[in-house]
Amino acid sequence: MHRLIEKGLMFGNLVRVDSPILVERYNRALKHLTGKETALDVFHIDISGFSPEIGDEFDDQLYLNHAGVNRQFILLTTDQASAPLLNAKFSMARGILKQFIAENRSQLFALTTRDAVAGELVNSVYLADTPARLFDIRSIRIEADTTRGTVAMAEKLGRKIDRFKTEPDAWFDDVLIAEMIGIAKKTGDVVRNPVQLKQMEFVQDNFWTDLFGSMYLFRGVEHPAAIVPKGKEKLGKLPIPFTFEFSDRSAIAKFLHLNDLVEPIIAARGVDAAAILKQKMDFIVASLAVEMGESLRGATRRDLRRLGRNYARQLPEAWQGLAALLRWASDDGPWPKITSEHPAYFYTLRAKNHADADLVNMLLAELTPLDVRQLFICHKDAFYRAYATWPDEKRAYVADFLDREYQVDKAGTRKALYGHEEPMEEPVPTRQPDIIHRVGPWGAMNRRG
Image (cartoon, rainbow, N blue to C red; front, side, top):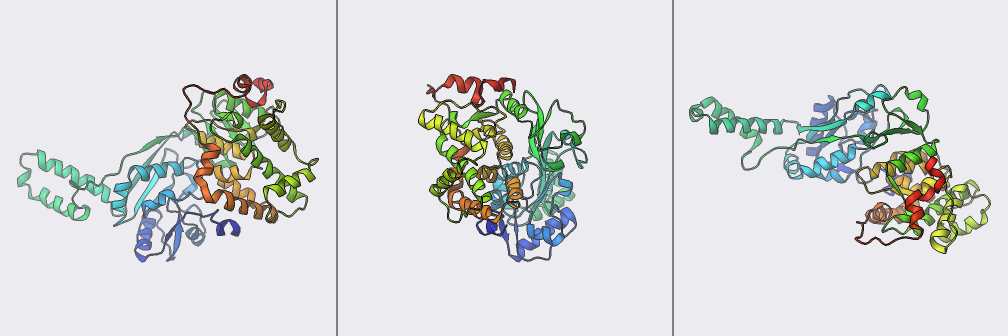
């Protein structure tokens, strides 16, 4: 993984902790949450305060995420909002932490100038010992305070101030006044500078979890289902109508279609569909070229086109299907019949503009593993697992590509691939809109899919 780390593609954007004051605050919060302390004086932390170096020190990569449920967090700075979340067990965790920091930025900035903020993403499940228990997760709330309890003390002081203002004899209550003065020495003036964190709760009907070999749960859709890579028979009875494996391609296609979760890339507004298809085809060529013993060192798109011609007969069906679709989109070729069973099918889709777009793109990334860029952007854990199995030649090519063409403009690339334009007042029809919008890119056969 050293290439990825050197290029900032792994452990990138982590926050460096190297001052004695911040290390001391971190240890105080760590002791408060776990009863442990680190002996390191320099380390890096993600958005939750998890440090891979401390994980190695403790020989416990889940020291802030016991059993993978109810993730704890330590905030030393609001700069953690831009950091990744490492060892994620649930897809919604980073989004929740990022929103919590954004909604409380000024308060957290003030609190972290003096202390660390420690907290937990709390749900009703403390131990997900069976797959069925995952369905008990319905909402997640955030509990947080400084290690010295500043927020709780501020609330207590606020209540005493209310008593002082409203009770007739409060002016003569020396005990109450003394208590207010004592608490105020620790919290400061909570009247002029309120110390209060927003009480936030998040309903989670649809999410991905890394537990039990990976699972996508879609409960908040019209036609609910769970989707797993394989081994659905080992999950036991689940409280959901349908469970699909990745090999159940037609069933997954029908699920995505019935719930209106995806759209064909070629029908998406505001994207260069031809460029996206060509890049997906290049990734497939690169994977085949490595298998054939070709060197990809310094390979350009022209080199990949040459390799594609050289190995045209060996290129897989996924490439052939994308090539046919590209001919239709660019050169007025015949409309290709790409059914849900065709290896190219999921490569032709992206998530529609809805609240679970990131989750759907994450699922599509696992269903299209040869598109290494989408896998890296949408599902880094799956990307890292796949990367570890690739030949060194492919690792070098992919790392160089991502460094050269993704790192330089992450936001722009994401927008180009997954951004959604607002619909126009007068929609401009695309070619053959009746086919695209009535049956999607898979053709009429998939209505039974």
